[in-house]
Image (cartoon, rainbow, N blue to C red):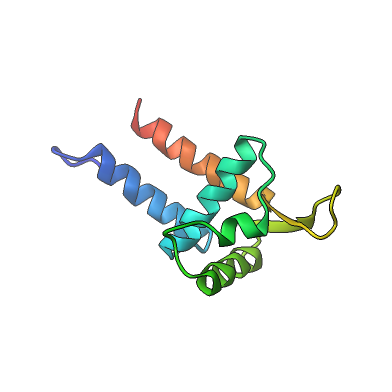
Amino acid sequence: MNRKNSSVYLAIYNDIRLANKRFGLSKQLEISMLNAVYEAYLDQIQLRVLDLLLLEGLASQATLHATLKSLQAKKLVEMKFDPTDGRIKLVLPTKLALKRLKECEIIIRNHCK
């Protein structure tokens, strides 16, 4: 974006929107849920499927479950059984999801130079 009075915010927003499109992310709920997965992963917290389904203020449980399935189908999250309790499913970002996170970070850094 090389306009004289450009907004850094709008430039970053647009570039991240384009990155999201490349990764098949078009719904804000998918992005919000993926951000929760990233946050837990980076904080080294085991995120259970139940934790995601109980996120307040995002959507109904049915909508959250459908969103989780959509992220899984897009190969952005994977679910694994907890090794200490096989009844619990954990949600983790995939390599593809981590690639998206890195791409978004690069976009922000490039605009803030």
